[in-house]
Length: 167
Image (cartoon, rainbow, N blue to C red; front, side, top):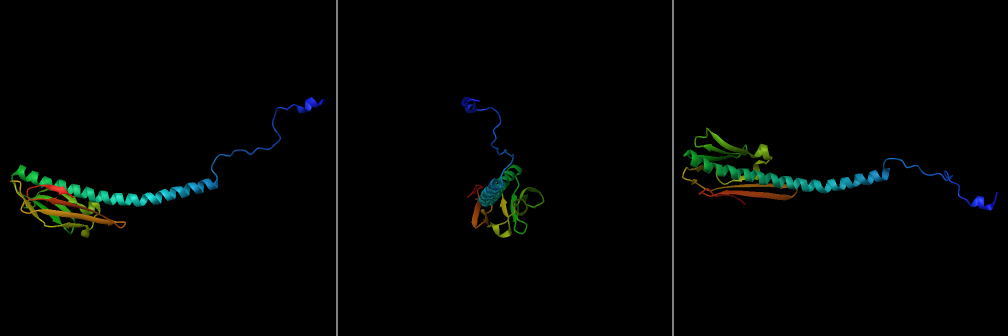
C-alpha cells in the first residue's frame, strides 16, 4: 500500500458515536413553559375580573334605561298610566300598569346580574308615567359595585318629561 491509499477518505459510517435525537421535550423546557403560563394567567385573571364587574354594572344600567323608556312608550300607546316600581328586597325593577296586574317588563338585578342590596340605590319608588308623556316625579337609580378594590358605578336618571340618561 502506498501512502496515497491511506490519505484517501473512506466512504461509510464513521466510528465516532452520535447522539440519537429523541422526540419530546426536556424537563427544563416543560418547567419554563409551566412557569410562563402561570405568570400570564395570574396577570390576566385580575383584569378579567375587573372587566366582568364593569360589564355587569354597564349592562344592568342599560337595561334599566330601556325599561324606563319603555314605560313612557307604553303609557302613550295604551293611553293609560304606567307605574315604574323597584322592589328593594328582591332587587326587581319592573314596569306595570297602575293596578300592578300586568307586568310589561322587568329586570332582575339580583338573579341576572348578581348585584346585592347595598349596590343599588333608588331615589323614589313607585313613579307614575302618564299618557301625556310626563311622570309624577324624577327617578334616579345608582348602581355601584366594588370588585378588587375598584368601584364601578353608573347612574340612570329619568326626568319628568321622559328623558332617560345613563351617566
